Length: 240
Image (cartoon, rainbow, N blue to C red):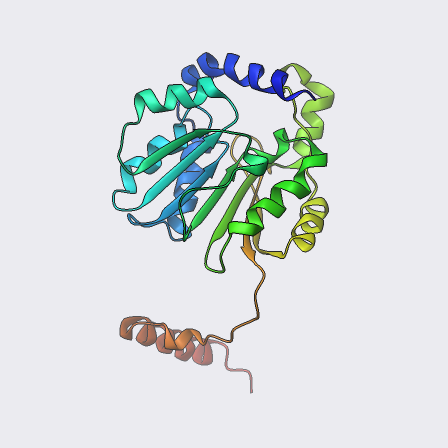
């Protein structure tokens, strides 16, 4: 697929994305970011930022950190820049497969509904590039359509698909992670509009396992609650 055609497609998609606005999917992904540790001082690299719907949500919360938003569509980036003017947010029009971020010590790298639109033969290059600037504490968050759900749409609703819209099986992702010193930390299939329509992954830089005892990280209140829970289990399920 010619890159020029891809850029033209997403440039032309700006009005439709604007009409769609911040939908349930985007909001749920923002909530997932919060659940997995997003803080006001987090440093975020948003790959495939589109017209800035997620960037807008992030800008309301990340006041002390930094956000670098990147998209292949110049018109999408221009749209974002006109509406989100914050000194801690930088926008770039670039191919995310080989983008080199300016921010350092990144906490989160997001690929939300992006990799299914990147040609399969470029995925290894994409993950190799991410591996070069992903440190051990960074988390790469990926959201994709369930491959089975996308296959259903390809067969039954091809008119709803984008210029590139391909199923990405987990085994294919795992192969690219293994090739590029990355590992899978979390995986789930979940539902937004139809049952089991999306999949969410968290990727990390591969590192040596560290045995960190949870009791050493718990607060006094958490320790009391845990002790009460253990006592309750022993009393209720007294198997002797």
